Length: 293
Image 1 (spheres, rainbow, N blue to C red):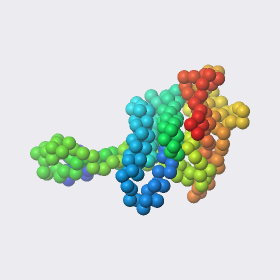
Image 2 (image 1 turned 30 degrees about the vertical axis):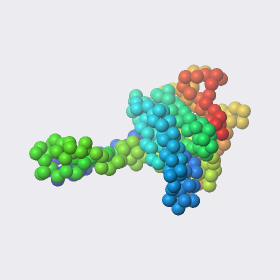
Image 3 (image 1 turned 90 degrees about the horizontal axis):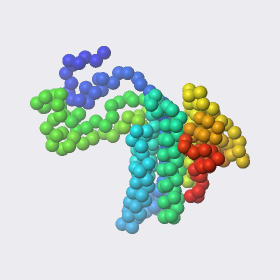
Image 4 (image 1 turned 45 degrees about the vertical axis):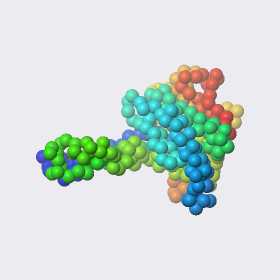
């Protein structure tokens, strides 16, 4: 039990003392990476000329603008890190477990992937590879400590208020450790699989779904007493959550399945050819993931 009267050296000490309860939550996570990004870096021995810097600047700015435009603050948190992008949706909250809500998050991932690839092709660049996984995350530490957290309490006029130096400097973040990405197994799986790339069959600027997402779709269908559809159509393996005949909450069509065996981890990864959104009949519209390839 935490002693509220315990003296603390600073807020870091205080906040650590309050972290006693284990809490995990179910999450979906996309990791997407710009292909071929390191080629110029390695070939130039990491010494870029101005033209190369400008090319990298324009490529990153263009791709990440698309990420910003397709992030919904009510559904997902995005992490931009150099040539990679992560998107996390907490599907443990009751307000976010309806299949339509989950489908809207995944649609945002699909549109992000498609828009980046569309611009990359126009600019004669190799595009991005994206992997979606399901898992859990554990909040094991408080996120994003700031300058004020490091100020010793005995130097403050009031230990419960922000220090003068923090006020004067705008109290900048000292350590970035966003809660949605803490001990996030979905993030880890997507990141690892994307990094394996063509060595394990995940080739090119494609969109892939790991087996855990399909397992989650089955669980979600049962929870909401909806139909989980699993069919083969025109040589494609199709999985959908249906709320009415021909009306999905969301669904995938896969043209390829890849068996993964990596460091003892065995799973399946599916290459997405089409995505069915929540607001269109299956027979009327679907996103073609190959349209830019």
